[in-house]
Length: 233
Image (cartoon, helix red, strand yellow):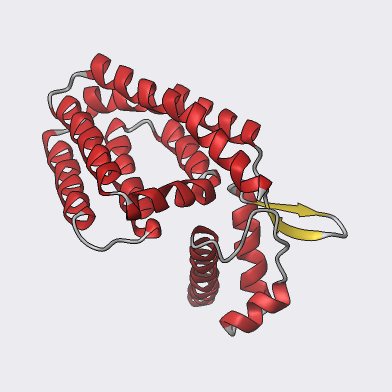
């Protein structure tokens, strides 16, 4: 029994280091330090982070699972380069999945869960009033959406939505730069989230589902064009 516990402890330490490396790579992706299509050097990353190559490999495998990395035999790992078609399809998937999740959230959320989502939104709105980076906007925005999603208790759908958000992290970060520099866009996002929460709080499932779908369908047009502009640079 003791031997088994020691093995578990070692696995935990290894996993924790891999998680830290994974989080750092995600930060670099979202900050634009790693660009779409850029090749990743395990040795270079290990030197930069002062860790062995093993947790780097584990973190890269996790990024590959999330669709952010493609690992080609004899060529190595590179950050994916999303095309406008890829972005369109990812937003199409969001527009099919997330409205359903929100419908179930209205049906399944407890009063305590609804209150918690309101507190998350309140904290996000407070942060938007001050100096905030595009990375922070992405993180707070994601926290709000997934705190709402989780109240649906539709775990498989949430898991799918989570993977899509991971795949869109790079382009959502770039879009988030607009919120950093444009107060009007911040206000529009605040209004949109307030509308979501008001419908959610009052358990208006049909209305919330329709609004989420409408907003995501708008992004099906906006985001592919933005990615096309990036790839042309």
